[in-house]
Amino acid sequence: MSDSSLEGALALLADLRTDDASMAEPFARLLPVTGSAVSTVGDLLGSETLAASDPMAAEIDELQFDLGEGPSWDAALRSRPVLTRDLPGALALWPVFAPAAVSRGVRSIFAFPLAIGPLRFGAVDLYSTTPLELDERDRDVAALLAGRVARRVLHRALAAVAAPDEATTSPFSRRIVQQATGMVLAQLDISAEDAKLVIQGHAYANGQTMMEVAERLVERRLRFTRTGTGIEERS
Amino acid sequence: MIQRETEMLQTFARLADTLVDDFDVLDLMQTLVEACTDLLPVTAAGILLVADDGRLELAASTSEANRIVESMQLSAEAGPCIESFSTGRIVSVPSIAEVPVAWSAFRDSALAQGFTTAHAIPMRLRQTTIGTLNLMNVASEPLGPEAIMAGKALADVATIGILQERALRESGALSAQLQTALDSRVVIEQAKGVVAQTHDVTIERAFEIIRSYARQHRSSLGDVARAVVERRLAIPR
Image (cartoon, rainbow over all chains, first blue to last red; front, side):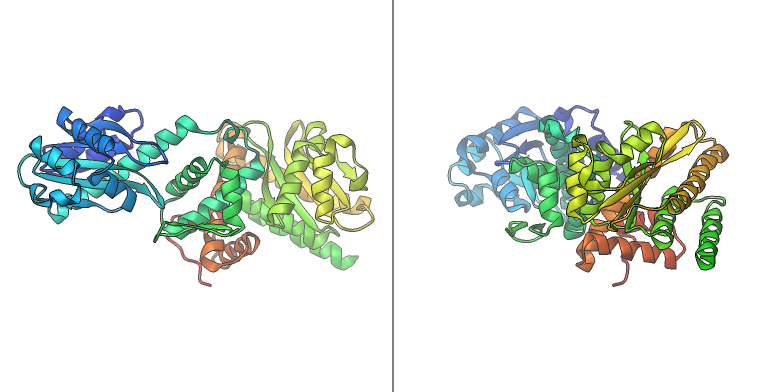
């Protein structure tokens, strides 16, 4: 795999004009896996498969949703990669899902979380029909691609549900949101763009406006951390 | 009075000095509002510039306390600022408690901050008005004519500077130029948040830290703010 193909894939994922259905393909192309699927998992954005590189990848994803267990759930909820080189030898991990996946020919399965700051909302599933180990470089590539996909998915989802009042918000509330964005980017050591997504996502998850969340941040009644649940509330 | 006049002349010289080469519009604004509170008997001063969408947005203020900023912004929605901007005239409010009902949001916010009088001076050169200079006071008496004229002169220098910069750069529409200045404000707000977090200080204090760092290092506010937000610069505590 060349660096230029990775760069190209990252650029393509960052380009919101491209089709979301093509989000899974770079994983299958740049990593030695058989197939890949991208899905949202959990309360924030609901549970749904957004893209799959092949029908089998889509089926493995659906199976996990139906059964309520599997590497996607674990990766998304713990915000940590799940690496299962030998699935037939690890049936106990997911007592219902694992045998079902093995019976479909899956030998290795991996999942990388879709998360930004404390927001955890999905996972990328990678499967192989032959036993496979992802080396360190593979894992880095997968995490890098997953990070780009996460931003894209959250951005798209929030744009679709953005509260109408955000567009007409006053210059004053915009200032507060910008100040809160600065606080969050320092709290989580992320970019300003991601910090804004975190505020927006948190607002959406709690049925609040961005201004309400921003005020709580500026008044220090709310802060995000990089450990634990990632959210501290003080009232 | 001689001393005041000397200070005034020094301020004009400093403003003129800001207008060389590659000057930063926001730095000019900040110098101007600080000159107003240094030289005139006013408690707080702010400059609002017209944004892309035709609304007035705060570009510089002597106090970055959010509640004071809110008062000024409300004045730009329905209050002396917007009236001054749309008529191109100086609007004096000798008693904030007695303003028309339509301005009640501004009135309540300003009174809550302890302000009793307000003056809005248009930033205008011939037919072009680019914003207003807003002076707020806790004194019982409104500003005298001399102080208002001095404020007007300061506002004029800044206005000419901004319009002049545009002529020099031929950077197209005035509205785009003003919007660019307001856009740098976004980064400054974010930088205030970063410093408030990293230094564990108020938003208001965070601005002072950024401002004094920029001065000490002869950088523009915008450049320092950008470096802070991109985490290229950690201002020492």
